Image (cartoon, rainbow, N blue to C red; front, side):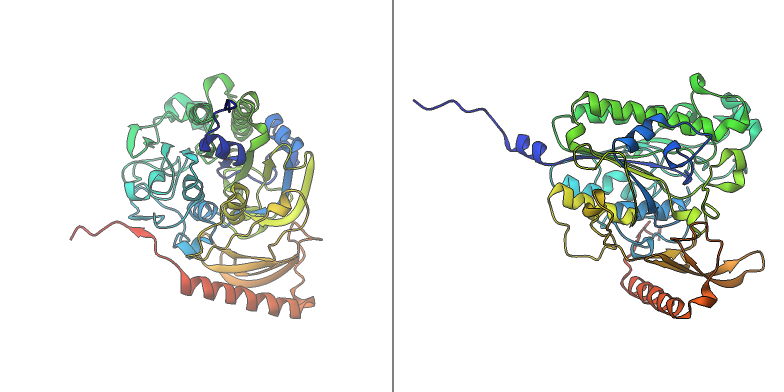
Amino acid sequence: MAMATSAITAQDVRAEAQPNFIIIFTDDQGYNDLGCFGSDKIQTPNIDRLANEGRKFTSFYSACSVCSPSRAALLTGCYPKRVGMHRHVLFPKSDYGLNPNEYTIADHLKSQGYATACVGKWHLGHHPETLPRANGFDSYFGIPYSNDMNHPDNQGKPKVSSDELWADQSTAVNVWNTPLMENEEIVELPVDQRTITRRYTDRAIEFVISNRDNPFFLYLPHSMPHIPLYVPDDVYDADPQNAYTCVIQHIDAEVGRLADTVRELGLSDRTYIIYTSDNGPWLRFKNHGGSADPLRDGKGTTFEGGQRVPCVMWGPGRIPAGTSTDAFVTTMDLLPTIAALSGKPLPSDRTIDGLDITPTLTGDESPRRDFVFYSAQGVLEGIRGEKWKYLSKSVGKNGKVETMLFNLEDDISEQKNVIDQQPDITKRLDHRMKKIDQEITEAARPVWRKPSAD
């Protein structure tokens, strides 16, 4: 008589072996804008808990200091210039976007049977050929570009986010004609941005619950705290001096809801959560912007405050709890690392710039030795090599080019220019920077462009 066997399917085996991945990517959040990264003003108990149960990365870099290039780099594992997405950001009238021939994190995981969803700000092209479902995602729900942009031509909007608009959220929500999309269709115009962070989280939770028995990848790029700032009425603080704090604390509460869902479903032991930001804070908006302390400057610059961002990685049983590392890593490293953790090698038909940092999830060694800095307009401006950072960039209103060398181990705030004391290091870094840029430039791949009407 044959013995009875349990019906274990290939899908069961795959779900058991392959971890889930959640990337939470905020917009314009500074290095100092989490409790676990030193904020003495903003309370973020839920993200702090992820850090206490996981690991902080204190030398974690976004690949650019503005939105579109940084998002292209995260998803493709490439410098934005390699994929043609390095010249500032996309606007509602832009006729190009991320080429669907590029290979994204979503493409890689979908090829292994993962369910994939993008919920939030996309900003890699609003044309159907460039939206998330053309780039490896099964579904999309979110704002296709920045939340201060107007459909269809970016006309008729306020120039800035202001205390007056924060004080009157019910009126301000109609000032920007920003669209909300479901897959390739606009479903709300203008989107009610007061509730958008919570609605993103609702969709994210629905996705996790629906795929609890299958491996999944959730990319959750929040529209906030990019200006204009909004929160739901039940958490609103009318004092405009607390506007930014209020928004971050609301994001934190929503991160808590999502993380609690993962815990309650019993998925903690096979789920990674990565929390980080696309670039540094928009300092000129003062109480509507964040803080990069103790770093220099913020969004739009290649100083540390523009591209070194807070990062927390959580994976109980796989990432050591309550740890922190100053190992040198970037958003580009997420694709090869996720590929390694999922168990399938990346295709070998293209160059990527990211490196597998799986050893860095538990230790302090990183395979990364250097990282090139491009301006918000895609101009080569510097390189970090180990502890040294070399910059050659225009500074000040007169546009004078200044060369700088900083020892980031001793001078994280970039206040001591030691270029005159280290000519050999300066020469070596300048040569290396130009060599890397030359290779990227010569091998750059094209963006998708809207066909001509002719």
